Amino acid sequence: MPWWRRLSILVALVLLPQAVKAGQAVEPVAVAPGVWMVQGASALGTPANRNYISNAAFVVTPAGVVVIDALGSPALAEELIAAIGRITPQPIRHVIVTHYHADHIYGLQAFKALGAQITAHRDGQLYLNSDTAALRLAASRDELAPWIDGNTRLVAADRWITEPLRFALGGVEFMVQPVGPAHTAEDLVVFLPGQRILLAGDIVFRGRVPFVGQADSGRWIEALDRLLAFDARLIVPGHGPVSSLATADLQLTRDYLVYLRQSMAKAAQNLEPFDEAYARTDWSRFEHLPLFRAANRINAYNTYLLMEQSAR
Image (cartoon, rainbow, N blue to C red; front, side):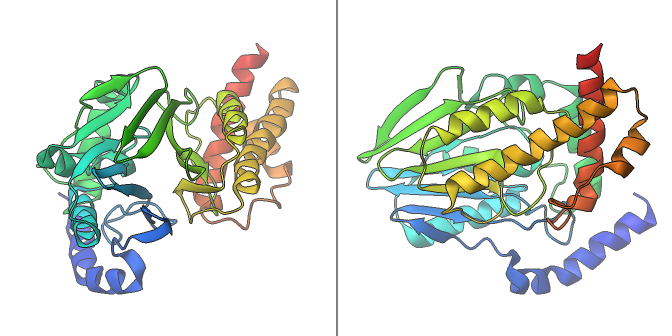
């Protein structure tokens, strides 16, 4: 391990108490009766923030707890499990994985050890068995040590689904809806029809620029249109605070993706070099959002390549 990486780990360990005091502890907040969420930082994963950059949620019922997503390290998941235990004596019965991105799944092994049933979309197997997943985990063991280490492993679901799933636990109804490929091939959302609460995973980013990466942004827009039809009262996004302005926040993510596609499609059709197209594009509506500088250029570039292929 290079000296600068060892130094960054030592700095992270020194700063951890301050990070927790600054709001990085896994502290559940009630968003509705029986429904809780924990909110990660609007940042890239680092040793200092323990890869706590995504949200997770859980629903407490008289017959057990259902958790949505597992956070970005085993230590974070163990903190979440302990926090759930302080709220209810009910066991954790289910964990639903909205998608297999590192910041949402590296905590799965802690829930697996409890005997919780893990549910995910079958296309998550494509990621788990890919070189990308193995390389990402190897890089995370270096870049996010000591929180991701040689004991951190990828965990498969116990139940793989491809169709909508409805089940009830303790009188609470859950609707698990596939909406991919969008942000990923395996996107799932969870809807609680009794309270009109949508647990949206990374289909919805609130208060920050989405990470688009290699996503099919056209299908992502279609997925957002489908979610608008749920008429949710509250949305727990994959990143950012809970939304009581569900339609507006769905629309903001949708508008960002549409704008990316429209601006980059024009450039691709005109054979305009990406750097020139990016420089002339008016980003003023979105540049105030957190992670704009970290994510927007790569989002635009990947969308440019996508639109370039579509124009051929």
